[in-house]
Length: 258
Ligand code: NAD
Figure 1 (tube, rainbow, N blue to C red):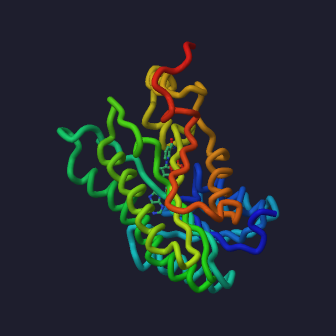
Figure 2 (figure 1 turned 60 degrees about the vertical axis):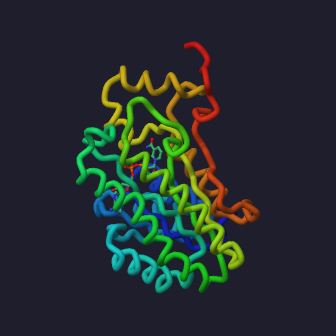
């Protein structure tokens, strides 16, 4: 098993990528502390992992609250003895997020607070925990929108994911000699609640798929597989990288005809 004996702290585990990663990592032998602001659905993830024979403790955490993030790492070390993997995955895409002319300040502030400050909090408390374990892997979820621009913008979200990429590189350099690796995972468009509620008509979905050479949305399980590689020792010479898992989107200039 690829994460045998390891302990992973994952945020945003109530749905989507976080839930898929909890199941996949546990299946590969990791013990999971899975955190989300949404208690009930997170409990459902915990149940799914346990039903599949895995170990997971679900905990209610708001990643914007530093004390709450500190408590999440305290729980992991208390219950499982160490932390080897930190997957800062929780994020939001808020209504009202459009271009620089129209996006309200409260939408910008809230997006940056969760998507950027939340990741920094995870690193602030994750790095000391990984040090105590003698090293480990941090994975920060960015997005393909950090690498390419769209004419249907979400300016706050895009800025937040660009920040995640930049801070990932910097932290990778700072902690490289301590055996702590820091990489970003950049998903392409996925068939999760987050994106489908934004692309809420068949026409909007079709327009987005025009840009994906593979011609389909990704599945959270495909992101979990990529995160598993970054979490495991198989990626031992990778740090400061941006792993794009996007159906070819960022490689495309013109995509195949329908
Ligand atoms: P999702 O909405 O299914 O999952 C995100 C989770 O984060 C939710 O369970 C939510 O409750 C949780 N969360 C939100 N605010 C929180 C907070 N303050 N504290 C703790 N938890 C909080 O979406 P997903 O698609 O699984 O997204 C996971 C990550 O992937 C996000 O960072 C997202 O930006 C990124 N991403 C998604 C897509 C996509 O197409 N879905 C594409 C690129 C990147």
